[in-house]
Amino acid sequence: MKKRKTALVTGANKGIGREISKKLIKKGIQVIGTSRTKNGVNVINSYLKKNGFGFILDLKNTNSIPEKIKEIFKKINFIDILINNAGINEDNLLIYMSPRQWEDTIKVNLTAVFYMSKSIVRSMIKKRKGRIITISSVVAYTGNKGQINYSAAKSGLIGFHRSLALEVASKGITVNIVSPGLINTDLIKNLNYFQYKRYLSLIPMKRLGTTQDIANAVIFLSSSKASYITGQTLHINGGMYMS
Ligand SMILES: NC(=O)c1ccc[n+]([C@@H]2O[C@H](COP(=O)([O-])OP(=O)(O)OC[C@H]3O[C@@H](n4cnc5c(N)ncnc54)[C@H](OP(=O)(O)O)[C@@H]3O)[C@@H](O)[C@H]2O)c1
Image (tube, rainbow, N blue to C red):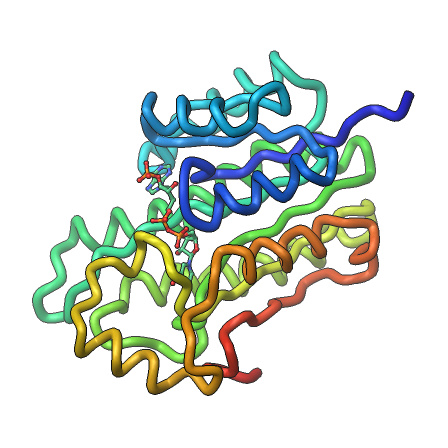
């Protein structure tokens, strides 16, 4: 019998991460879904059923990541697919932004991806196979008032992934980014009516994206159909930005 593939998805308790995980298990892939909290892990375990397990991982605590990944490797042999999905925004204009807002946003959105990838890529190199897919954002390309921290972290991911893609291309590992526009999740729940209307006016398709729109692209990049694609950013934004 063919062994099941395993994917690790960060921030799998809700939003885009949850949708990605659900689609992965439909493809027969077992999922390790991470969450900051016990509650989040319960949510993950309840939809995964026997198709994997939830695991507590606070990405703000970047130094803890290598140990946590070691713990995961005690339970499973190999992670075929790493999906760096979790992210936060702590918006403020530069003049009002606190060092904490800057540092936390860089930590969760960028530094944690360094620790996650470093902790997992070595085993992928040994097996000469693997997929790393990370969620960036349209604001990595366009910039956005009030999001210098978030857009700096998300565009930092672009250089990170291009460089890593070059480092591991000959080892059978692909490294790609999915860059969403405005997606209907809790991440944008703090937008007021006027901000929402303004953003909508910037989207040629005149609708927000759905978690399915993003998850479908992630599933494609994690499949064998995408085996010759590496170092790329796939933009999914209803025409809001075209590269
Ligand atoms: N929604 C959009 O419009 C949009 C646009 C562009 C890019 N993105 C990106 O898409 C990804 C998913 O976002 P989403 O829209 O699905 O947002 P979401 O519904 O707010 O989900 C974010 C996920 O990240 C987790 N997370 C936050 N801080 C964490 C930490 N310190 N440690 C571990 N996990 C943490 C959250 O866990 P908790 O529930 O425990 O906080 C949650 O599972 C993010 O990288 C985001 O930047 C979203």
